Length: 83
Image (cartoon, rainbow, N blue to C red; front, side, top):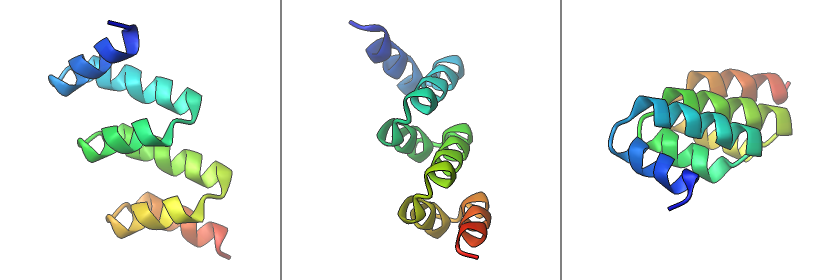
């Protein structure tokens, strides 16, 4: 089992340290899919990282998706980018 698979297993079992590590690694890689999965599982840090990456990349579709889910940070970044 590779390290990433092990981290995911631990995160799925509720290990917050594993979640934190996955968020950090996914942010470094720009891995939107991993961040979405973690955010959907309840990680606010993953959601914050998604907003940050989407804002940096000007990914309005991702910001709109997050805003539609009620993420106020995404709403704010989206409003700034659309000015």
